[in-house]
Image (cartoon, rainbow, N blue to C red):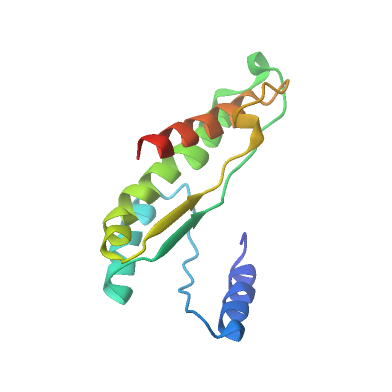
Length: 135
């Protein structure tokens, strides 16, 4: 969810289903120190993590690669690649403590198809897929 309200709606749905619990953690994926603290916070509350779903990403701009500003390219890579890596690094020990720990890391078709003007996003998704295969 992109907002706290969206997280609260998801939490309500999980509670209404009656088969699980969730902990809401609003987190800015550009806050690397916050991502690094996440594993410790989850460990304090739950002691382990059963599932991680990483679905956040930014597109950046759709433009010829030579026209993409460095700031835009770096933001796409920071959120889509670096934040994903730090998130995994933060919670990997907790997933391993679970009897059935799983991580679901979303990607996109653009990681495999050379769509014109999608270079930053496509490169970031290809990087994430490669990182996941080597995890």
